[in-house]
Image (tube, rainbow, N blue to C red; front, side, top):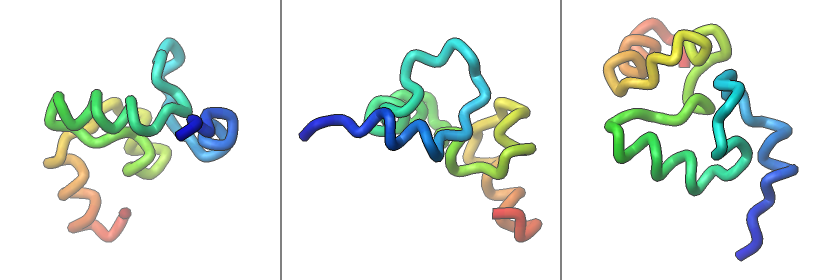
Length: 67
């Protein structure tokens, strides 16, 4: 399967400038799940910018109806 990195970048909201996985969703997801985190695309823009990618942060956002 060929990576659709250019297409994925259109919707990637990761604000970490030096991320080597931008647009490579399979690598990004694998990386974050190994760290018990979710990738930035799971979060609203303002929440992603905090770099808190924890499941707990995501759960708080869900309970606030922000996700």
